[in-house]
Image (cartoon, rainbow, N blue to C red):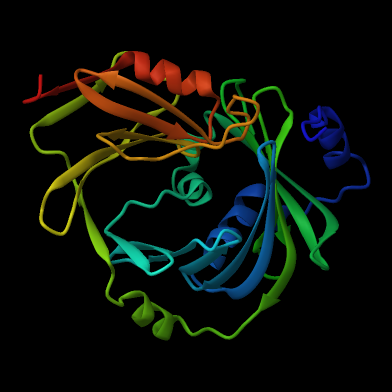
Amino acid sequence: MFQQKFFRALFLLAFSPCVTFALENNPQNLLADVISGFSTESYNASVVYIRPSGMESVDIEYDRGLKKVTFNTGLEKQTVQTTLANQETVKVGNNTISHRNKYMFNSLASLHSNLDVGLKSYDLFISEYYDQVAGRSTSRLSVIAKTNDRYSYVHWVDADTKIILRTDTLNENGELIERMMSTAFTLKESKAVTSKLELEANSSASYSHVQGLKGQQTSIKVMPLGFYILSEQSIYSVDKTLLYERIILTDGFASIDIYRGESNHKVKMTRGQQLDAFHIYKKNIQGSKVSFEGRLPLVMLEKIAANLIFEDQHD
């Protein structure tokens, strides 16, 4: 059975006497090295995701901030993050949709830049056990939730490049619910400039993400411990039609996306239940369709939904 109660065994192994620690390789330093690699490393990787809903394989081309992911279903997704703008392009067959200036949340980057906030809800651990993943030696960087209302993560980090090659996701009960594993990994020469130019090709449709929701105040009567509103965006089509609004909550590491309007996002079901790490909870609030989405227990999304209030011209 995929879900295994191995949380205790995992940490007995991580902190066994044979594990060595070095002052220069404390968890914060390793985290900083991982984040630094986001803008300096270039590689190709084949990755498999193992979830209760099934397995999914993807091919990744990464080039100093530009990421192209090809799914086994034929879906192709490209993202580029720079100091000036963020862009995500999704290609299915001959149709290409581009999202410009989209806020793209990265949990580890957020934790690194908001360490004091994140460490209120999570603990960081490191173990230099040098397991082999995709034929490469790795250390383990663990982000462990202090409360049982959010998930924990164990990352296997390449000892040389500091690129993450494997991630185990543990639910609120310490059970393994998702594993991302690199099955092949190759460093490559950078071609970032060419790739970014290719990403600017004409799209079938283009959406603009505008920071700040005019005339609206979002309030949550009871916010889960450590969470706060990080970003509020309005999403418009190329003809300036408002499609939906997006609000991002975070505790410095985990995030919740709240979509007001029809987002058409779906979640994979297993025996009629949401058993994967990613959950969606939908509810009508003040006459609007609202979707709550994130890698958190479903009960957490339900609590947010029960306490959300929109105060604007629609009321």
